[in-house]
Image (cartoon, rainbow over all chains, first blue to last red; front, side, top):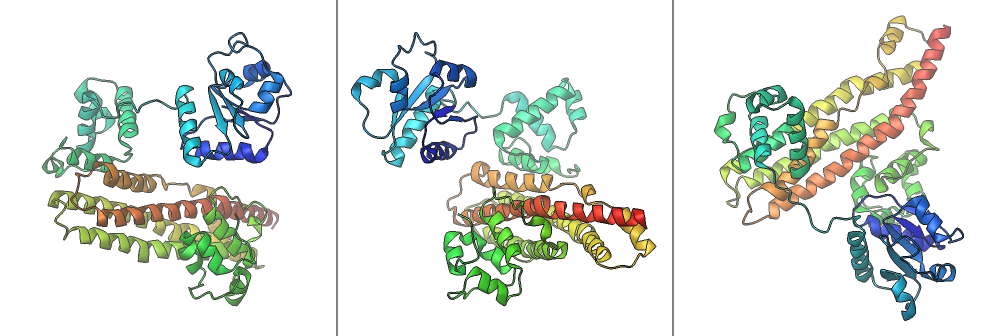
Length: 197
Length: 245
């Protein structure tokens, strides 16, 4: 993401609001459009550009597709209502006087349209194979033992375990065991006598 | 906004009530009246800059006390860290254990689930206790002994050998599994338990867990960013002195 805006306070505000959406991505900042825009875009290669609208139209009245960045999502930062004839040049127009919910909604759309945020959560349920691995983890088997039981490499076992942890948000063996019991992947009775952790 | 010496202590709490427990650890109790931070520190014989660094690192996790940190006496810091340990073990953990016990009378959960949660929490508590004991019995005494050695003239060979045998860098951050367990417990409660008919006690437990996590993070932050550099400096002084003698 690239922000071109002369006001420090406005830049900080834009960054703060984006950070409230809890996503991490690189943010570059430029104060003014002294360099020409295509060069800046080449340099930073952003997926999303937020640019002070005044500056944008003073510097660049050219045609967007001919300027060679048709894939880029552009949002103008404006300090009031946007003149209608400018609308064609930008995908979004962020009026700094808008109330917070409106701005947050627009920012959410910018992130989605530019591909910085997924449009929908991918399915986070664990696969059948991962369930098998999880079952053995809960039963207290080591990666080596699991690899022998399932005829897969230790490396593959570790990949499965990483994916399980990522999908479930559970990191420890005892946490995974609780999950496995709650979801009837193992019976509490099966665990008796197995030494865990 | 940073907390500064001329703020009234009451304003500090209005700004961030999570600081209540932190301020207690300095021996300052409620009933602040109109007293400012600096007045209360003076009344309780607490070095003002030390108080400010500690509350500000808690208040703003991105606050980094570069300028002032090396001036503090290690014993001052150890005393604070020791107070936080007592707070976890004597207050916060029993508080959560109480809530978990209250769950056992709650018809909203099956016996199995109560047992699982109880067991998991017990595991967590014992790991946390082990970790804390290690610091209290190994790390802190070493630092205090090192400080005593540097502030006196004596050159007891046995003590020198003992100090040489250890370094603060050996004290690795093995907070990891303790941290991960707390993280897991939160997610299990938030996402994976079967829907209860009433969540109120679970809400209280979760609230406590989030508070505990925040406090533990700050504790680790103070150890890494303040304690370790101070001890590092002391170790350099120690080696300079024992090499030349």
